[in-house]
Image (tube, rainbow, N blue to C red; front, side):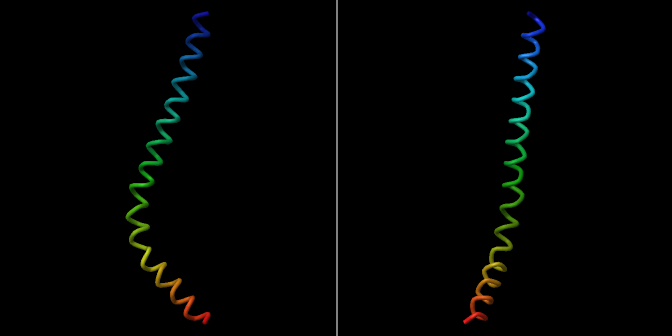
Length: 56
């Protein structure tokens, strides 16, 4: 019975750790990618404008 309780606790602990890791990685990705995307947005906009002008 004690082994079962420990196994259940261990499984729950592992799942909580995976969830916390996922949240940390997602938050770090947003922090890292946000400035990068803001920096390249004008270049993408200019490229799209140039392509649209070339098609008309």
